[in-house]
Image (cartoon, rainbow, N blue to C red; front, side):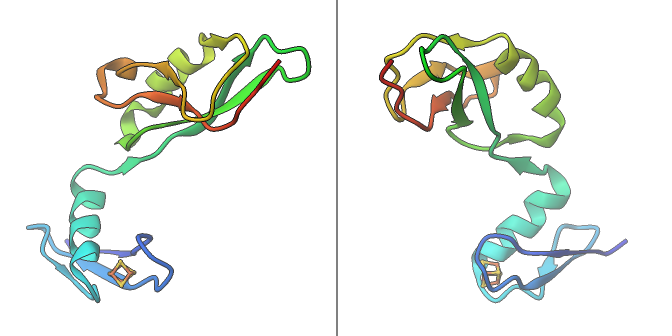
Amino acid sequence: MEHILTCIVCPRGCELHVDENFNVTGNSCPRGAIYGAQEIRDPRRTLTTTVKCRGKLLRVCPCKTSGTIRKGDQFRIMEIVNQTEVQPPVKMGQLLVSNIGDTGVDLIATREINE
Ligand code: SF4
């Protein structure tokens, strides 16, 4: 069965066709072939979310995973995120959870919070 999807790697948005052997056509560059095959075989996303913050002004701290995680792992990882709390000061890019859920990627802060 052929899968049809839009490449989201760059704004050009090529229409990709991926066959049952994960061969990709319709891509205008090699990145689309990699994306298309992975999206069908093992879809992954960067998780962008917030954790609780004990700040004077902010009760949440924006954060994201340092790399992509399997889409199927998102709910499991969100359970860890929901149990995570930070105490300011928080630096941009600060490590919040190392190797979150044994995914091989970290949870990092995406905002500086001074108090
Ligand atoms: S295949 Fe290449 S050119 Fe086309 S959208 Fe993907 S990254 Fe952009």
